[in-house]
Length: 469
Picture 1 (spheres, rainbow, N blue to C red):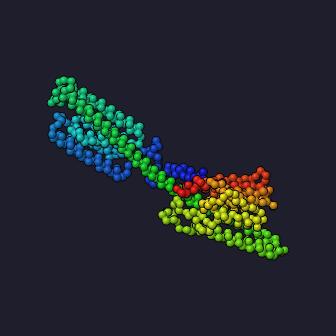
Picture 2: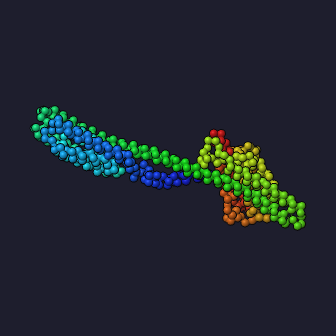
Picture 3: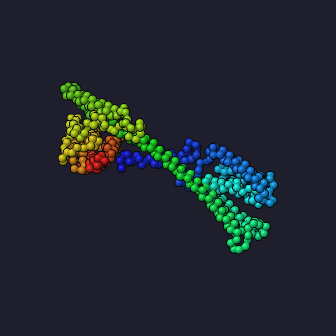
């Protein structure tokens, strides 16, 4: 797993923490698949709509009651003021049906039964109000168990009342006088079966549509939640990309500065020691200091120049892929394995004798692989000069293995190995990140016979296939 993969593993926990926080409305952004999820509270527009609906149903119910009273459907209807109260009890509570759906359903059910028992001459709007109440319980009640219990109690109570009404009609000879009661399947029985079937469909439809509305709301919330999750995940990935780019820049700056500053320190010390005895050699050392300073400044300008480059066309600034790739500029791209002999020569000049050997038949390397191998050789030689001790010698081998390339830098120094324990350890960390970015492995540690070994192995076949794709 390379540095990019390791960074992306932290994306989802960070996104989950953000999503679980409060939303802009102050309500918790719960996962719709979580057990405690519920629909957001009704908006002001929805509450106003419910109030208007309740008022319209009340007006319609009063008009329907007046028309049926005039038509004389009921022989002994309830008094007018009683009828209006019953109709108000069955319709007005719908104004708050989304806030307290279960309580509204219970109140409307009681008003429905009372209106039937008192012979209120109205059925159409009463049935509409009861249907909407049952529907709202299924669609809006946040406690799903309570919603099920309330609907079950109401439906069972309504069917019990229906059975009682059927029994009354069957035992009252004056009830429904126009229907014959003779025979097992008489017109009276057929009429009662139609009433029973109508009520079954009525209550089943209210329950189904209510559950369907709840499921649809949950699906919409799930879609919105996933969209918000993807948006936040993209923001986290973008921040991770910027952080990784900063780490790459810091690694380049470390590798560019550490090597040249180390050489400049050694050359300056040599010039100081020789300035009183051998002015010509001291001058030569100072010239090398000047050349190292010039090279260091050139590499620093190249690395820092990537920060001033405009983003590539079609890439949003600050987005994924926006920072320019290290090594894209010409002077950075020129740092390849072909220049490793220069590093070996510079190391020899400043007091660490080193040899360089190429094993196998050289093959063209991807630019980033070549740059990373150059930087690894540079850092390994710098560490050998720092910690190898007096009389150390370094060997640099570049092996072409057909499907891979391997760089080995070993020294036989006996000095205390402070590279990991006493120093910052950024050099070895940078080497590992470079090799991991190319899909390879890095072995670094003391040798059994003394000294220190750095071996970088990078496969080429898989990487070439990825680049071709």
